[in-house]
Length: 446
Image (cartoon, rainbow, N blue to C red; front, side, top):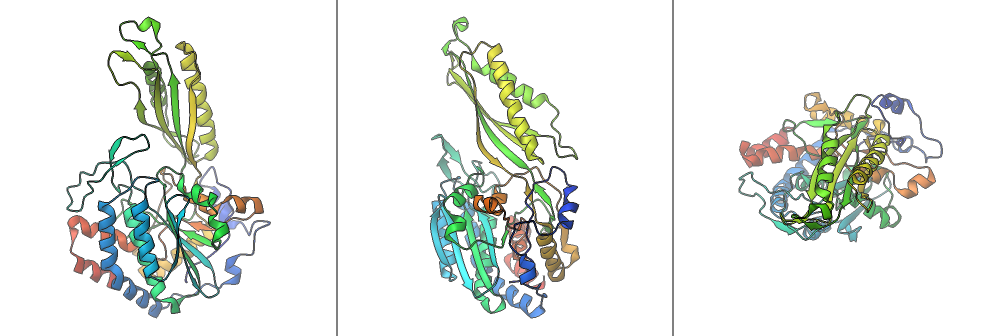
């Protein structure tokens, strides 16, 4: 298996300037020996590339059909039963040893191919509570019950259906060309990424105790870029984040006697206005916090003052310390507003989920970049700037056991082994830009 493997010094930076320090840093004290020292960088041979591309084209139609099926049958976080089954069946047919029900509906697949590095390819599985209005012939019409028992339209609006098809296509190609590489390939189908809880659940279920601990973890994400482009990041890529549920407790009453009640809705409105009125534009120092109020729930009747109101808030920043300070600030603000309004029960602020900054290992990212440049050419490569998007992917490189042992995994959140970029072509063509034969031709020429 080509590509570089290197230790990652896992100290999430507060600024993008830390990338230079990461590039200069040697192996961290207490870590295991660098995989780069054990396994030399393989040259990218033309016959290897041609063989892998041929394998991809043999499986491409099946991958497209899988994508279409997944797009029409999305499942919400924690309910990915059917999606997990599709992943299981594909990987078993490819010759992997497959395990199910890890951390929920998580899937772990193992393909051992002699001595060598252990490489994990990870894909998410869940969809979002979004109604699809694209008008596409394969648009999702799925409806499901959310965590509160409410019926919600469901859509793969974040591209996880594409990610699954890509990772399975890569897995199938590598499994069919085992003579070209050595090592162990792990495929991870992760549930509940959208709620930022799936990676933690799989780790808690013994991910790195029950199966080989990877030397490197690779993931990918589609984005609003020209079809066929491969975006790379050699450092800070995604923001840290937190999701808060804020419950304001008032006193229920009748609309005709408001003096005998404490209405929590105006308090919630004051909180929302306070959060939205502040200047939260991200700055170069990475310390600003982006605040997004995504939901407000209170009451069900115009003439009844409800007993409580719930505000759901998302916090994002390129600094994890800034997220911690923002949580404290929100707690103080809502407490003061509730006291001023005469609430007798203190408000509750719950951190529903939290994620770290995603800082790609510079040496690993540079090594993958060099391989892609050789195979695809510099014109198809570009640098991806830091984003305020959040991911729980970094947890896979900093599991609890590794932190205790003073170890860290190298990781990259860019395209995996080059093959993942093909789905950017797939998705663009499916939206009516060109037919399937042209797609095959472009892949053969890439």
